[in-house]
Image (cartoon, rainbow, N blue to C red; front, side):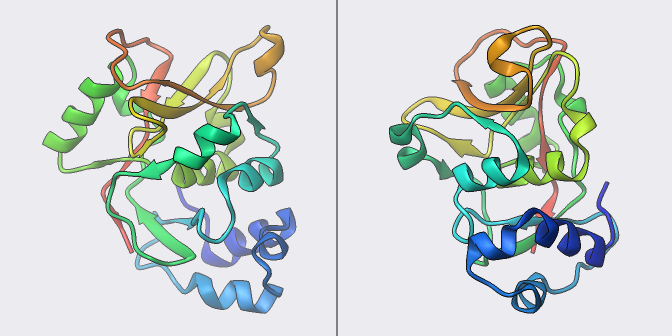
Amino acid sequence: MGASTPEQVEHLIGLGFHKAAGYSEGGFDTHAGRPESKDAILVVSELMVPIAKQCELLGINNKLELYQLATHRNVVPLPEKFLYWCYDIDDGRRMKGFAPEEAIQKLSDGKRFPAHTSLVLAIIRLDIQIISGNHRIDVGGSRIEKDLIPAVLLANGHPDHERPTLSSTRLSEKKGYSTYGMASYSRVK
């Protein structure tokens, strides 16, 4: 799924991520380092560029309220780096049809981690076509408030979701849908 290192860094620079982070193009490239394998996706930590700004740079409609963004947290192990690599990515297709809590359990049983918000934004950055038609990617590796998880969706014909939209859904939602899936990864470095 990942593009080559120079392509990913150049794409981020082209989108203005380096400026949003307060870095020159060269400084940004230095922080990226090199991945261990070709299946890696370069993730921009929300410590470097906040979620709302990442959405703006990517053209994603952010429907999360300020108080929701203030309570956003990751619940999966992540390195304390500004830029890092995630490996063996699934864009949510493996978990289509499962309710959020059920998907998290299945991923855990398979020794995988549910994706966090910055990773899902990176997945969409690499291939906007992943989020097409009536589709939602649940973000089980992050939480908002007490029992919400972020979700990125596109709903054809719905005026609020004509472009990919970051919103939220209940972690305890009991029903899975055939067009919804939870993204995941196997390791991060």
